[in-house]
Image (cartoon, rainbow, N blue to C red; front, side, top):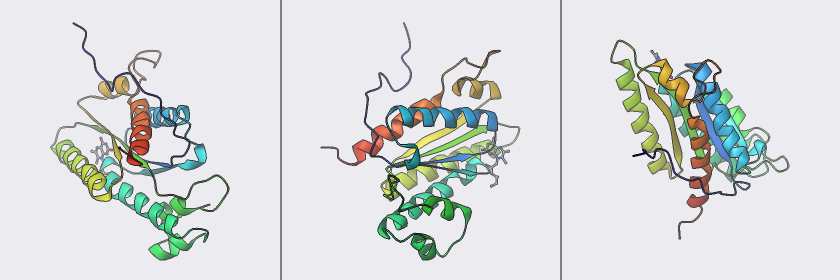
Length: 204
Ligand code: DLZ
């Protein structure tokens, strides 16, 4: 009997009015790059405009919950200070790169200044010889779940928790000698962000 895995037949959603944030870790860059590209490809296919996608990076997966929280908060501040470029940064009292990037160009053209409709957190954790992996995987999973429930914004769980690098290559769709085997889970995360971003605007 065939085993059906994955989110099922994708329904098509119009993401043209959405603003999506992506925060990715930089550890295990080969897989991260492919997963990020996969997520962005799915967003583009759903019509999300490139100018309405903000990508930020952090060193490792452990930093993901904090970065997602800061990115989302900055977009809320930006939204409430419509038309005043830089006001969000002033209000936050911060000149960090994260703050600068998330609020820059806020009043230009088609670029949305609305709070993010969904945020995708991407990381690749590979189990080593110590308990490090277990602690980080647990903390990040709980941190991201808490953020979406407390912050009332969908946070897409793009954290691969792997027992080997090979598992990750397959899940990033870059396994095998031609680097095209497996399935890019980043695609699923992009689609999930669009679906949840739209459903967030109204469930009934
Ligand atoms: C330290 C560490 C290790 C050993 N492994 C990974 C990993 O496989 N994937 C990942 O995203 N990050 C790893 N890190 C870095 C931690 O997530 C974090 O960046 C540091 O502990 C600093 O807080």
